[in-house]
Image (cartoon, rainbow, N blue to C red):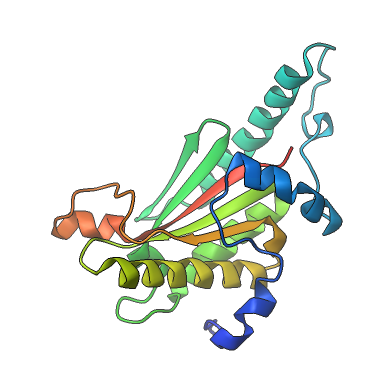
Length: 207
């Protein structure tokens, strides 16, 4: 049976434990006790195949995180070879850019069949690499006023988050934000606007 976003009144149930704020270093650190209390786990040296020699703890932790996140990046890259989707590295983090038209219905504010398939694939990988936090950020183009753009972008992000929760991604891992027309990644012309309307998933190691 095709997936449709559930009634909006039920979204708080799906997103219980999610944070509706930017995913910063400070906000991740503050959330770790809640994350661990909800059966979350941190990246440890057990997540890599070779034993690290004794040395600087910060350097060792970074090696472990880099290895873990590189495996996550490769898994996402191999699984998401579709138009309108890209997988990138940003330091230790992995960023998945999902152009709106690759994720949602063209003339309706709901996930498309192809978008559901994409989020299902992403959720399956995130459930395997679960020692991570996820920022789900919605963006629009600059054709709307600030308040309307922010509301629309937040709706997009929430819909993606609700599906991911439906697919068993723990919402305690999530930071959900709508940034409107901020941070454009393309020109504000006819083609560029299609790219600026997007959802970005930024995945960071839990450590």
